Image (cartoon, rainbow, N blue to C red; front, side, top):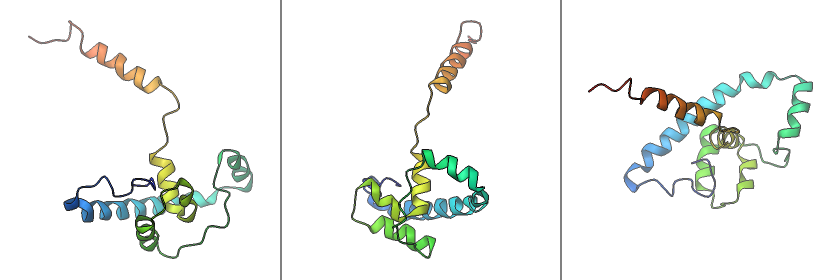
Length: 124
């Protein structure tokens, strides 16, 4: 739901209200967990700027989290840069839409599957 192109388009008609509420609850949880993150030092922020694409300071500040979520869902724009206007949604997008940088977890999973599903462990 955090991708501006999809939002609620994939949700069946009967479940939109429930999914919207889950989205609002997740945004509230994300905002609560980010309050502790604001204690970064200046040097940490400077090194993090190298990996950041959120240097757009022209984004309007939205007062309420509920208002931010509702405006995002009603926004007709499907461009990814619309996320600069919605800071909490942007943080959620980065958290949930970031690819795993390595294949090591997948390789470990297949390794465990090979150990579990070998002839010695099969019960007949």
